[in-house]
Image (cartoon, rainbow, N blue to C red; front, side):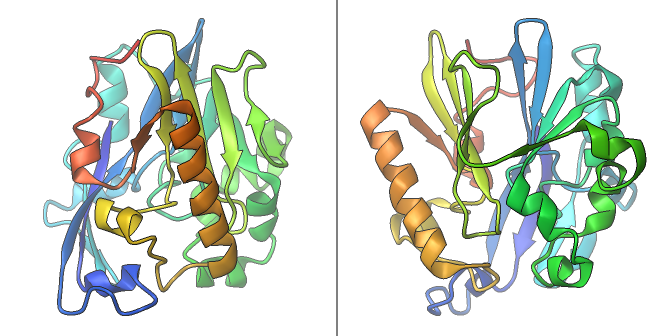
Length: 253
């Protein structure tokens, strides 16, 4: 699903080695809906839908953010409402991945324990672009009882079909998702391990990254996993990769 668009100026924020001076960049913010038997898993929730109320978008530092079609409107194409979603997995806590988490109060939140616990120091979390209020339903009150805190790689349903891959570095508990489809084979949703093709090819690290050494180690591991399984890499912010997967209501099997 198309969960927002991001115009980046300067592009150099995606390099801590000054790789992209005097350049701009257009990215997408994507969400993914996965059906497992009769249950629904939503992977990442995109930019906050309130942005759609401003036809000119909003500016957030070097990022100009816009939304053409709110997430709930796209779910309605499948006759789904937020309360019909059983699980919400977030690759990490950045605002463009957690923008609508609070809408899914009936769902179980799936998040790495290290990521969830990082929110316990809100000022520090915000310094790394993680806004606690975007998931505050699951940080306080009843919502805290419906959080599945992962520690490392986790087979979500116990049958090998959906596996969360622990890839710390971009944030403390960053992860990707491997989806094993019967006909299409393994699909790797990369979270923010890389933000665009050139960033992947050059093994780049953003200047707003949490831990550089861990990020490079996680990049090496994910690349090897994709190679060994002959999987399809989907860089979630890459415009060209968005077109590798069908938009709702179409889907891969």
